[in-house]
Length: 253
Image (tube, rainbow, N blue to C red; front, side, top):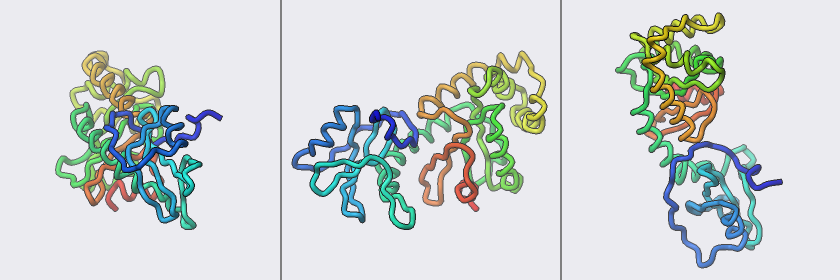
């Protein structure tokens, strides 16, 4: 089995500087993994007594755990009896957090449609493909909070699912009223969406291409992919349609 098949994808390909980590001598098994393309960002301690390594492979983050004799490495998640991932906090602090902070600044500058009040206390950036049924379900799930003025979804329109996705996304983003056009498209999704306007498509074409490039730059390839700030101001990324508990956190419930 190739090394890459062990990778636990959490996505993001923006560059991260490799942090210095204290060690008298790098264990041979870690040196071996480094030769395979693994980059060590830092080490961390675990309650299990194993030393953890926060690492990246091709910009993707994962945990590696070293056995006490330094001869063996375990790649993947280390969980306790309650299902808690003992490396999750370290990965978030050392890799995902800084990466998501960088992503947030890029998202702010992207081409998005503001769905909800500008005064909403919670902002969620979400990559949206016009043909994505899960994007549609995500918007439906957030409808009450959007109407109440507590959440604003900022749809970063991309075209990746079907052949006509780029033109449909451009049709929305390049229209004279993108919010109205987006909502109309949602109501007509089962009927193929709204009628396409060639002028709007021309106006929105470049912006959609830039958004799609940004999605890939961040290391993602599916919609919806969303980013929000939790109660501590930490940027959290969520791939796909969130489960109910994750959805409640996203919406600030």
